[in-house]
Image (cartoon, rainbow, N blue to C red; front, side):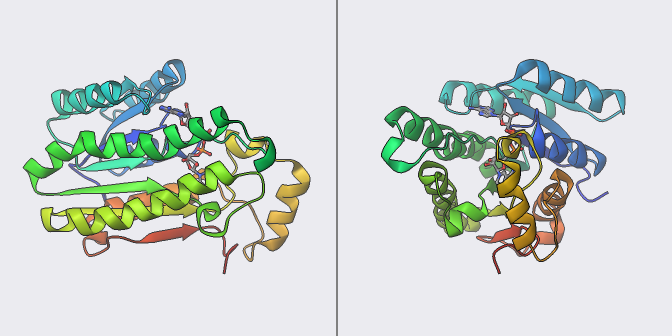
Length: 246
Ligand code: NAI
């Protein structure tokens, strides 16, 4: 098992990619804390893992609220005694043409996708500093690299994630902490269920591998970056997009 003995905090672990990551990490031997604002769905994920004999815990967290996030890190320490991996996966969209985008739509997406990720990193650092090791993996997107119509707010956060990842890889490397990002293409989840079928067909046609991604495709990249196989990998943005943007 590739994550044996590690403790991982997965934000947005109640659904979609995060849910898949939580399950896959548990199967690879990690003890997992699922952190999500959707309590019923998050508890169901943990229940499923517990039934399979995997140690897991749920924490109700809104990543935009620093006090929530601090409490969550405290729960991980109390429950499992260490934090080896942070998967900063919680994210939202609130799409609109720029001329019509409200300040509330702009602020909400920045608060969850970018400030939320920073809140979580700051909260796990004391544990990682005292261990002298850690792996932080942030959810970016192809949209953060190449942009997308109607997603100025979302693209700004996902590009911001890349900048933050590289800054922190430099800052935290000397403390034994690796910081990387994953940039998925179009992955079939609740988030992309809102995208019109016509647009998804276009994406399939533009993707060399000829299909949308599935959460398992992305979870495999997270496993690699979290594992000791990636011991010399930091500051990278790993595209998981079927070749969409080459
Ligand atoms: P999803 O919408 O299926 O799941 C997102 C999860 O995050 C949900 O469980 C939700 O409750 C949780 N969440 C949202 N706001 C939160 C908050 N303030 N505090 C705590 N939890 C919160 O999304 P999906 O598709 O699984 O995406 C996961 C991540 O991957 C996001 O960061 C997204 O931007 C990114 N991504 C997704 C792509 C896709 O095509 N689905 C493509 C590229 C990146």
